[in-house]
Picture: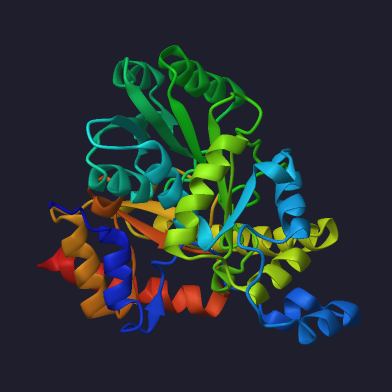
Length: 374
């Protein structure tokens, strides 16, 4: 059987622990355990007293209710998973089979695309247009969606370009899916990472009756090590995904669920979002200053959200070649644009501590200068 590997994750798996500076990850500097719990001694006592047995397979009732509140859903719509990666995978496995047609936003995190291809589906992109600030090409979406399209997948806010869909753009996605009865898979892991506003990006939940929303604690909340994600879906699809969840992982970890309940309390949400938005805003300012000082070698469409910069370089080399040169000569790992469906770009994480980010950007500059003079 043919198999499409997940090129971005393979790249990170091979090299992320071989460099001095890793800018290929996609979130902010992670939250420490003590920072999450803070001075809540009762929460610490509950954590230390936790029984390390199997947790409820679909998530604790308290956690499912908190997740539901984040999306404006009901607890019965929620399945807790091992990261958003599992949520995406079990959703595609529940909906897509051989010969089905799937439409995926690009550039994008290509997990859903790869899962659909590996299920035997045909996959077409609909593009975000760099000439219009990475806004969605809605005419292209309408052309791509056809009778028989099973799934339309979007990432909002977008990884890697940071676009936030407007309400009218969200309505257009819904209209395109509704026209043919397709499902929408909305990867919403970057809700809460807004750079220019403190308003959380609206969820797709409630806009259409065939929507699956995916989230996690990894990005906006700064807790990737918990490997805690979820999907929110109509009950029949939640049940179908749950059955596949039982094959894949059985459940997320009990300690991760305990800590997730702390993280998703409203007061903690406010604290974590404020912390990570500060890292995003300060980091982007440093990234933009670095780009401005590149003498035209680099450019960027400023992102509206995420801790990511999708940086265009003006060199006659493929993005994988450039990323390898940066790894070898700058001791820095970045994401290659080809791994997101767009050439001559690099994905660079900037929501990091200032000294670490500055040292990494210096390493990238050394490698790019070497390429530029060859």
